[in-house]
Image (tube, rainbow, N blue to C red; front, side, top):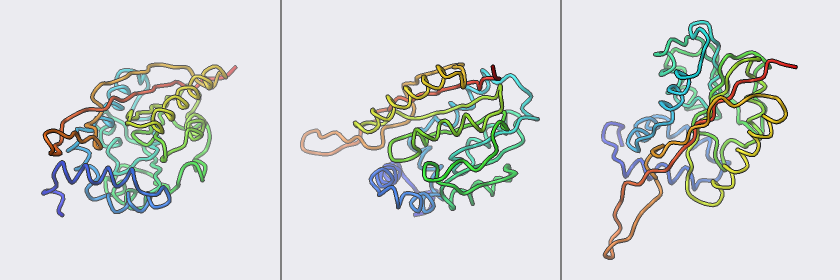
Length: 239
């Protein structure tokens, strides 16, 4: 089906297929989804990229034209395009899907793009280099493991910022992931690796793509939103 003719039902079906697919097959799913990825997310009122740049606008204190940005799980380059509008010009992108990286390359914004599956593979960048590190939408059970958060911190330069945005999807695995993630973020703060700048919870992160309600013997879609969180940290300068 062409992108222009896709509906919210098509978008929900794609999200459900993504969540239910075997993690080993998920990378290939994203490559196949690349052409419709942004359209489907827009149909589901997905706000994560805008939440990330809004937080950056509120808290980034450097010169965006000189800043080096690491866009982790960069996907189609959505976040980079919005950051470009803010004045950022230097991007390195990382993603596990070759199809998504091809979309990101077409934006013309990235000086380098790297294919890597976080968790099984380390983040393929030098330490203490980036003024801003972003990861938007990928921190969830079955996707990017919590252990990768330390890799994000490692990549940031001392005094650099790490911006993480994620949705609070339904189900025990997602709830457990959020609890463990926030425990790790706090632990890293206690270890002196970074300091918290802001944590924001939003009510309307995106429409819930999995919820269906039975009424009068018929199944109908009801617009219900899931919440989300923005986590913004500043890497410690040193002892």
